Length: 412
Image (cartoon, rainbow, N blue to C red):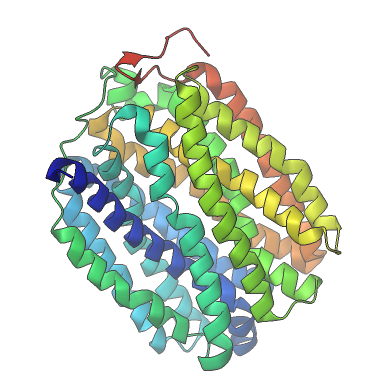
């Protein structure tokens, strides 16, 4: 295989591995929440606030990182961010109060924002437009695999060695992968883009008037509200409401996330690119339908406790994760290459301030007032809203080049 073909794949593998660590680090906390709660004598609202604070600083940092990445070396910013968050993860050994853990979490959120804002723009510049959903499907395999790794490592090691120990395991590989990124060659921005730079697509102010960007972002925000709340509270739901052990709760949900996530990310990316040959709205359509199909299955998962419960959770998670690749591809295609990192930064800010920043705390509050089962109604409502927004956004999808020709501008 020639070097030009090999390099994009190696770069994709390296950045995907670093993305995996990014998600493993943040999901370790979800696995060890009951132990943290017992040590510091916390309410569920306080536990939920740890994630809300992490994501709050994460989303605030993103708008500062995005414009820098559109002007300067994306590679160097990624390397600095990976070293920063990996170092802070190691410092978990020195967190002996709730306040110290909260500070640790907020700073890690800032470090991880540098990667999540920039890396997708690096990845899509390595491959042609008609492969973007499939390539992002591979890149975002890190979400389920990394999330599951966090649940499994935390659920297994924390009962044996204490809740701090799994964070050390999640930190060390980050330094090694940061060094590997340093040796990657940065691709030319927008080298495979076919759409012209218009005021809506090519300027920051234009994003406010860009319906393709706005509907994809708002649909993703509602999806993120649902996904964020489920990730934080599902292991504890199995533990406290369905009487699983802590280890089995994390193992069960971790396996669901990793298996479903791999299948859904690859299937969603393939399906989005396949349908793009027939309709320019393919990425929006796949995302909207997947969210709609997940609603009744999630309701079943919450209100049954027998053998049907775990399969129902698995099917609901599959539909929820199916939209990951096509929806991210929709956001990326909605803007021009030279403001793409800034657009992703704005997208990150919006999806988190409306999504998984409030959802863990809101669900914790409902759980304290009513029950954890009642709290899961909030993610179901968010899935309905996401589906509706994305169905509406289908008519604004841009016509990108597919197999050397653009999708028909009038086709939806």
